[in-house]
Image 1 (cartoon, protein in one colour):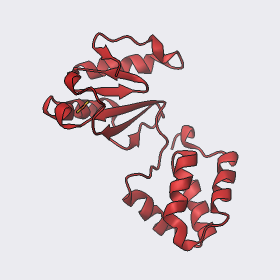
Image 2 (cartoon, rainbow, N blue to C red):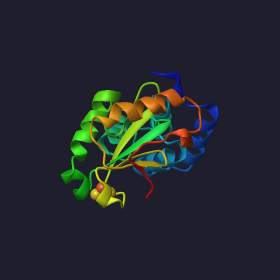
Image 3 (cartoon, protein in one colour):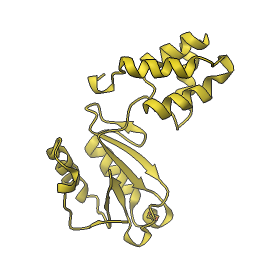
Length: 175
Ligand code: FES
């Protein structure tokens, strides 16, 4: 696993403070709070939760993997939302998502191993007339075709730590 997914001592302290007054029956609410604070629930945190609440690690893991709201990895530096609302769906959102999966090697709810990209599917971005639509961080890309995806992803890869505002796209739109 890449170092970008490592949990810091400070984060573990936060986990401990959340678990301080929690009991075995508080597993799901405790995991929700930790997810809100830390953003993801990797092995180190699962072990901590299992120890503090006296629950088998396998039980903690199965709860995390059962509920879609829990994530084993942090969001990527560039987070992609793919709209699969009705309007975008009929205009080819599924083909856009498939292309993103092909290019990045991960699907919805997952993050690339280098920590650069993560994908989620959402229901309507409020730009239905411009579908299919995705957002990357705070930018919206509209009327996409699958062939647009490699070029857009390549720009974000090239950016490294440069300002995201530097990205310009012909079909970019703000909603
Ligand atoms: S359905 Fe995609 S923006 Fe509304």
